[in-house]
Image (cartoon, rainbow, N blue to C red; front, side, top):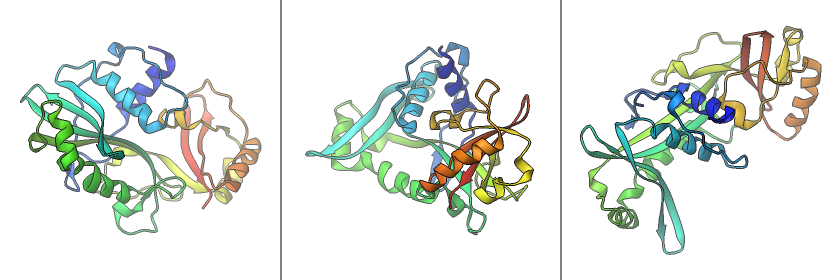
Length: 271
């Protein structure tokens, strides 16, 4: 497998689900065991959105297990010329011959501790993406789509009945806690999703961060854990880069190298 395919597939498989079993009325898909070495090389178009790249990764990984068989993916549901939505994956579970409608999501959320309710605390790095709105979209739009007239007709074309579907999500996420908080309660969400911290520009522009090296990963690399073989820069040069992002109201992810093998990842937010 190509280096990037291997890295991103491993990172995807190692990312924890945002919750386990069933929460919010939605059942989480449980991955069968997958041997990464068995996953075939596959191209990942550079301009493709991250969510679509994760669909390619999921598909490649699922080809190397025996329990689930792919029936179809990216099934577009249309009403005339208008697209109502898309079903991500239809899988047959060979253990009981059931059919799963699976929606795939991979997110990066910052935990805003100034908000009291856990599900409302999760916001995207630029505050344009909220967990509770994604949850509503899953429940009210994506999971109702098979039961529309057009959804039922699309399923019947591949010899499936909407009423026989099990519905699950593969909802993986990396969570980032406020820099000043060592511990924060996020139940019923999965504590294993915590991947780093977030802070504001003024907090980062301090002596506390002066002696380390830094790297600004592209969004493709956000999924990965930091590694040594990148072009590290000092705090001063990073501040110049980040300041440009702040002016565009963009919150970058940063990798920090404390020492060889000792890395952290965090977001510097503009808001």
